[in-house]
Structures are given as C-alpha cells and as structure tokens.
Length: 209
Image 1 (tube, one colour):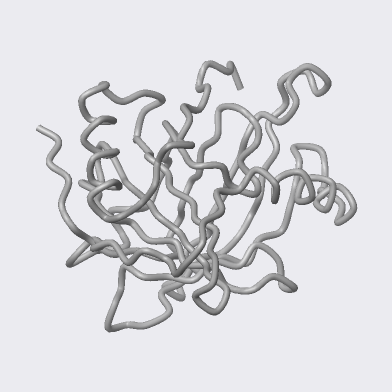
Image 2 (image 1 turned 90 degrees about the horizontal axis):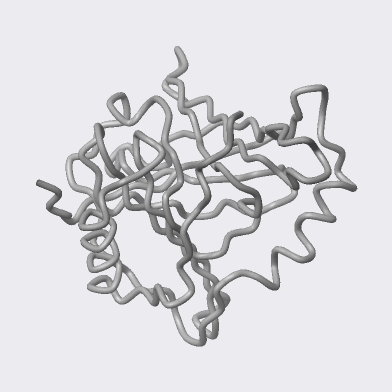
C-alpha cells in the first residue's frame, strides 16, 4: 500500500550533454532553454517548504527511475523521460537523465544528460544540490517521499528574494507506470505541502527506445 510520508532530498548535479552519437552543443542547449523557461511554473511570493524524506539513504535510491507525471521543467520536454543513478567510489552519484527528444525528426533516438549528484550537508543526507552546467547556479531537488522500490515524489523550487519563484515537481516510478491510486496519493502529498500541481501533466512512456 502506497502511504506517502514526509522525507528529504535535494541533488547536486553537474551535467554534460550527450547524444547517443556525440556531445550536445551549447547552442543546442540554449535552444532548449529559451522555450523551456516560458513553460516553467511561476508564482509570486517565496517557495513553499514541504516536509521531506526523513532518514533518507542514498544507496537504495540508485538505479533507474521513470517519470510518471511532472510540473513543467527546463529539460524534460521530450517523451519517455527517465534517470539512472550510479553510486561512485567517492560517495557522489553519476546521473544519467534521458528522453526521446523530437521523435518525429530524430526517429525516436534517445538523448542523454550526464551529470553528478552529491550530498551538500552531511547532516541532511537526503538533500543534494543540482547543477546542470557550470554557469548555472545550484538548484534544490527534494525527495518528499520514496519507498525506494516503487515510487519517489520529488520537488524543487528557487525563489528570487522571496518575490517570486519557479518550482518543479516529479512523480517517479521504478517501472514505466504507477497505479492511478498511487499517483493520486502522490498528488495529495504535494498539495498538502502547499505545492500548486494544477499544471502537472503525465509523461508518455510508450517509446521503444
């Protein structure tokens, strides 16, 4: 039975961009960013501060996660989005984020973002910082609840002097789908944390790649 609990996470990522056949150029990245910024979820005021995963352990969180639903985010504008996490010897995490971008023009090829996640404060092991490129600031990425084997609920928010903020939320799963009741309970948890999920949309996970 899926019972959302309050818990903490937030990854620190430094990502390089690669396609199956080579590196994604900075110019291409900027083309992705410009329209994506307009698709982010914008609010006036300061970020909500939902409860996060307590006693979070990084090792069981490793492996593959499929995106089930999300609020609009900068990079996730394709289909069949997933991430795969691998623990490194130094305690950091190698992160492989991928999606099928523009399947009509790219014949359904999968594009990858390669990065590294690490714990920022050892006193809060579930909180990490995420940085997609060196010229971008670190961004919070919090796991609000996970059972490690079925689902994860993730939230990220950045505000500007408490005047306005952009936030992101993801419902992830170990398989390409989750039972509707689990998705509904995940959404209720986000709402209970003061998060507006009115723009949340499902992610197509029907690709063959």
